[in-house]
Length: 96
Image (cartoon, rainbow, N blue to C red; front, side):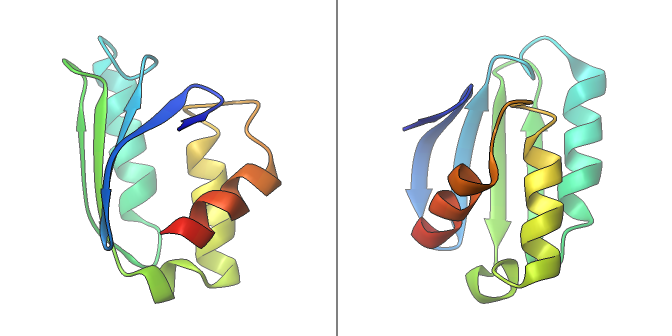
């Protein structure tokens, strides 16, 4: 599944691995993404690998679906996919 430049490469409940060409080779963006995702209520752990373009997110699905967390997640994802719209984020959250 591709979300405007973000690919879901692996998923199990509570853990998702995303891929983004924007992170690959961009250490400063990888660090910024980790900072943004770490601040979102419901996200327990995040690892961004600028060598592979991979983003591993460990989360609590119930807490991540709160309005505050949803808004923060949408804003963080826009760093990876600037054209990502609210409907795509909602679609993603329904599957997590």
